[in-house]
Image (cartoon, rainbow over all chains, first blue to last red; front, top):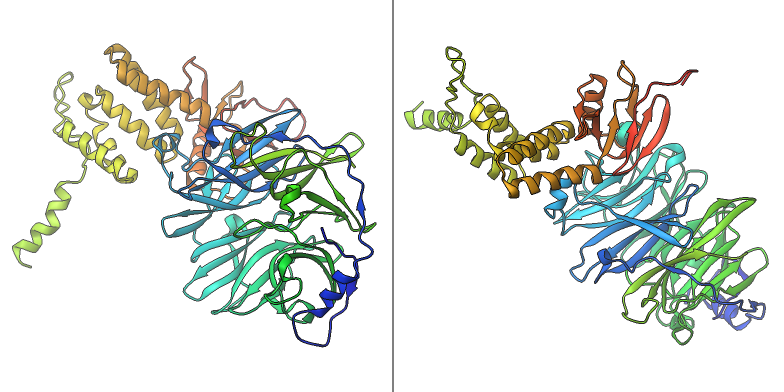
Length: 388
Length: 204
């Protein structure tokens, strides 16, 4: 693993980021803490309903009890959502039905659907996108799937700001892919189109603690960071950080302290291009490489996983020989720790925190290749608690 | 207008349900003039094509025909359509009527079907027992996205249109979700039962 704590201020040149080359060469401050004993995790995807299906995109819920939702995809690419509740050493689960009518569900309604892009609203409910045929609609699940009516096109992605009663949705209509803010009764009262970009796509949304939505604006040959404050009439994208302009920005996690964590792809031909994916910390014009050689799964990667207070960042080191270890980076001390999980072949990592007596307990979920008996090579889901 | 155009306008109307025509001159003899088997087939086809709203018109038309009410298939279709339209209490009542008929007719296949439907209700929806209160309980939806079906279910409760469980308990079926009941928000999950007792005192 290659990790650097050095900062780089916005360079005045344009090119394949030689600043990053310096960072890698002078990565003398890399600290990798001594590995602890292997952390045992609970396999929660070895159930009959998941036969032949792969796990992806686990996302922990807010609230008091460990709960997550994840996607499960079969070879026909139909995708279902499954909620898992963990208590003690066991778990319960529920697959989000294709219809509200149990009669229709029993008849196999919506079997060809692709439910994806879940975004938690509160501890028991979330929004998600349901694709059937060529259509994509926004749904809310609080026990039954309820469609959010009257949206003006194909919903591509959704992000939530439950504290303010706001949804952000990336919607494709005749004017292109644009970002919309939805609020009010049933999310039909107030709708605002925040972008009007016919040749660009707004994607990878994430909402910060102040209610601003952050996103990636994707053009044919570039990506930019975009942002809209909670009451903004329109979104802005900023290319002020020239250190980022050569990189393909993939996903964003905005932190409460104003810092943004990014997964980016190194450009072809750059010295670091062999490591492909990097984890960056951006504060204003300052860019710090937290890690390069990060593993990201195919398709839309998850946003960087971070603890609630923003101190710890979790990522997967792209090192197949070591089983793609999961690493926890401490932003306070600048140290990185291999979590030494009992699983191998990690594909995705998600973290959540739940109250216990005297504080909060960190929970981890990893998508990992294979079950715990070595009987198959599907992507399985494991969960467990993390020691401090 | 040429006659052919007139025919085009009139013919579809002839196929629409128009309600049972009952001759009230005879107390015991049914004079429902509907083609019950034909209507049942129409209902079945509408349902198969995912058009329950249209299918329900025919169900309502047949509801005035005693012969239809004695048909197991009628209750089977009535229950399925009502459930699809979110009228859970109507669907439940129809399923119980169908189960009774199937039992009386010793129709094992139909009995098994209705038993499975009843079991699905218990597994997939929420049973709100009416409890000891005489007044309708204060209940409203507290989730983020409400729909017409949920509002109709809550209207049933507000107006006291309860149904009986297999054990004879009065209550209501609603979708799982977040509800504000007597001032308290509760998340009711599939398969759960909740008793709508009046508040025990104090302000909600």
